[in-house]
Image (cartoon, rainbow, N blue to C red):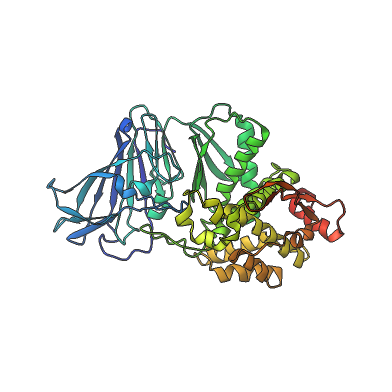
Amino acid sequence: MMRSKKLSVLVIGWFFGVSAICSAQSKMDFKLSFTQPEAHYAQVQFTCSELRSPNSSFVLPVWSPGYYKILDFPRYIVDFEVKNDKGKMLDWHKESKDTWVVNNGTSQSIVVTYRVFANKKSVAESLVDQNKAFIMPNSMFMYPKDKIDVPVTLTIEPYQDWNTISTGLVKNDAGQYYALDFDVLYDSPIYVGNQKIIEFEHDGRSYHLAMETPEGLQQDTFVGDLKKIISATTALMGHVPYQNYSFIMMGAGGGGLEHWNSQAVFTSGSFEFKSKEHYTDFLNFITHEYFHLYNVKAIRPIALGPFDYGKENYTDMLWVSEGITVYYEYLIMLRAGLLQPKEALDYLSGSIRRYENIEGKNHMSLSRSSFDIWLNFLNRDENTDQTTISYYNKGPIIGLLLDLEIRKNSKNQKSLDDVMRFLYNEYFLKQNRGFKKEEFWAICEQFAGKSLLELQNYVDTVNEIDYQKYLDHAGLQMDLSPLEEGTSFIKRSYQLSEKEKATKEQLVIKKSLFYPSSK
């Protein structure tokens, strides 16, 4: 983080583009300024040099990875103009909603300017006002079509008395920020304003904590709890894929979004929590986004990388990315000493209760909820609960049952932890790719030592789940007492608890899972 009026960010790297719009040595030089923040506008200028074609195409993404909804960023681009290096205006036209074609002729260097309207309070979109700017780079900066691997520089000119810039991008030897490629640039949100900054070291890594509304913050306690979360997560995975990481915590709002080098989240508007439970909920939330560093950024369905920024990227395995991450946020909090076993069971009970007490469970499978998320993400209609489910609810259920089944059949020598580590090491670190559906289940069966067809059917169908069969592995039970009369069925409590009597084998599994410090 550089606290100055100007910030340069160098982004260089590789990607999968092959077209020769720019040569391997050409550059994209961006400048971002804020001349009208009160009107929610950002000003963008970029220079593309060493052009090799008389017609050069530039593309703006239409969605943000991790946010499964078409956002159509190009609709906010206004006053697009192009000049050559002599200052002569050049003709241009739009080829599609997200692609601008410049007729540069013999000019090998062009300067493009445009304004961006940024007034969306979202972790996936940009917001500019008189007090600050939250920038999602993929909503601002165009890349040369099919050539996303060209070097990029970015200069940010903060508005008037804004003096702090927070981003996960790190510095090179020249004091500039850098990333490997446009993918990393797009995956690195930038917050410009006067936020409170806390910087700390932990296990040889550097951390940047930016807080828009820090009122009520108990700094030592909160930073200490962040360190516990980091330690429990990295101990689980056995590897840390970064040297620097930023926590960008904005004001009142909803949602969070994971990134390779950071997370950007909304808070309740202060750090004065109403109760211990509210604080714990917030820590669960931060843990969820942090574990996404591994599960979805690295361990990912093969459809989610390399990205096609111009259209939907479909997969029926998002329940692994999101649902199992919900499951692990509770396990990590347990292992960090920030949750008690009963609290973890209560959170898991809540997932089961939300899934079982809606009509949609009879109409949508878990795999289809993943594939159809592009239709249903944040889109609620009057029939939503009657026809759909959320992988945030059923996903952690399958995570729990899968973990229990692997532990039971391996005599507690293996667990879902081993599956996650294998996926991370084999497909991400060794092969630099995502996993296929059949590979995921084959690895789970490898560690379980048996077929997991029943659990696969629970994912791919709307079959009723035999909870007690799996809960018995760890001496757990479920309370099914009625809560209220629903429209077509009785809503039940689905409350998990520990059995008073359990076998030695059940106790071993239960203690290793819910009492990790007693191993």
